Image (cartoon, rainbow, N blue to C red; front, top):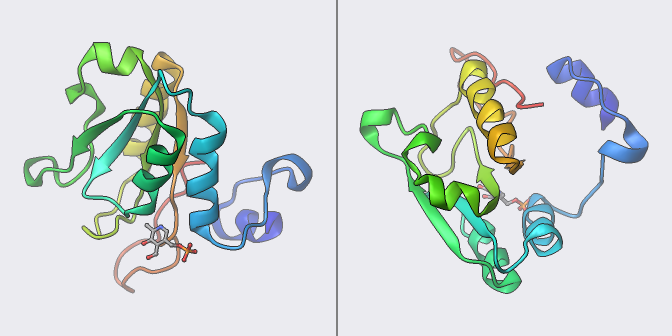
Length: 146
Ligand SMILES: Cc1ncc(COP(=O)(O)O)c(C=O)c1O
């Protein structure tokens, strides 16, 4: 997996500590919030989104703050639109690009901006990269957030 990620995205990972084989992508997106979400903290989720990312947060007991994907933002989620009081209590955010169901792609500069924001608010960044390989021929392959 680590070799594939390097080959595919030119990103080096440490197999022993940074790669975890799972039965499915949902196994990761469901168990990770259960592991890291303190019920007093807020989970930031996109709207619309793949349903399992919210189900795990219901199980973990934490509140959800929804960030709508709007046509005027080219369906790219804008963190700055979330109230500072929410961001201050947030624990993590789940991104998903290429997005299901909107199909939208995110650029590397979009990810760079998001990573800065995550660092500012000390958030855990979860990127559901399920559609890493499903793109139309004429579109450049999606960048890795890593
Ligand atoms: C965004 C997204 N994440 C996760 C999944 C499910 O992944 P898996 O079947 O590997 O659990 C899907 C399947 O449609 C999906 O669209």
